[in-house]
Length: 332
Image: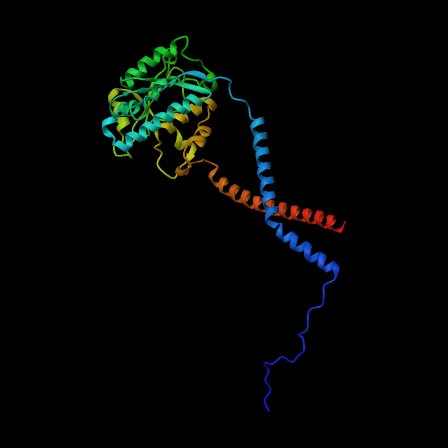
């Protein structure tokens, strides 16, 4: 005779023994603790953010205050825009943005140079007058000249000698001594220097009453050496910034017009090329101050590891403290 195993036998399956009151309380506490995990994580993040803001505020408070008013220096920067016909439409647009940055960086700096936009005409002027709504006419501390950089340099000599032509402050308060072959007359007159990376000469510092010319051209290096050739034809002294002496670069040393201008303005503030380069040179060019490239990578790794360790320790401490408080409150 066969027995049907599917039929109920009338015997109930064994059930788990009931939990004690203490175990039920513990189970409830564990469930509540697990349910509040996301909230505790959010609170920790908010506390960390608040802590960072307090540290930043403390640093800003401890930092030396900038001059109450910008100081005009007896030095001139000329942006030579005499390359209008050599650029394409998108390159002129880029140059327009760079000229705007040159003005903005100089205008916001604590120590300001006289700024001149020379050979201002053609497509560039048309863009400023139309698409940019002529806003440049309200800019302060900048001169727009139709004449070339040579004429701009001549005019610069006159306005730097004028009573309201600026002062010698910042890095120019104690200028470096002139070369032995330079006369006192040269110091008073200053000199005109066309800055170009193709020059065999290196600029050691900025000097009072001098005019420094920057080529205002965006051409993706199609017209190689054009600024150097232009300066040679005009009989103007040339020099390059000492970026190779201070920085290890992953790409060529040619910088945008506004970067060169800002580096010079930063030098007027600090008198240190390394500080100026480190602050201005775009990170995408991989520029690192020489002597620091080996240390930077190691410091970054150590900082990352220390941050992870600190965060994990802090999180464990906070969780332990919160659990301790919760247990104390549930027992009462």
